[in-house]
Image (cartoon, rainbow, N blue to C red; front, side):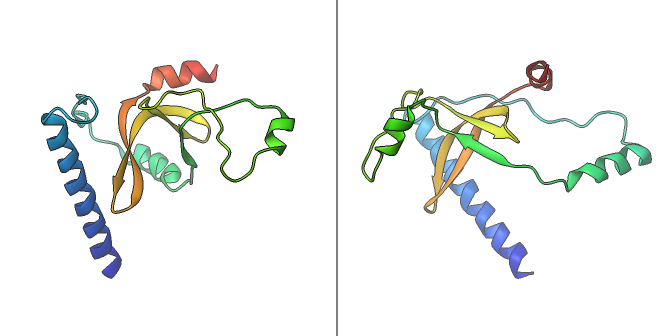
Length: 136
């Protein structure tokens, strides 16, 4: 039961931090507000067979990563890197990050910090149609 309580406290801290950021945005500070569509349930409930199929994949682990930017450098320059070196990335400050699942772009987002931990707020989720087009 202690784990559930810890999770609830962590979620509460995230909620508070997101509320603070929303207030800052309303005051004209920070990033632009993005309107998200409300999630709705389909009229038809999931059948037993569909539920079993869905249950079969829900526990498959995936790797999610956030990409700040990329850079191409020569091996010579790579070998010359040391503490304090700066590598220029292909993104400008303030540009959204890419959210990848198993190497596939699924969303863009912005960095948030809550209690000294980094997180990401999704600002744009790539549609399923667009993701399928990129696979071809």
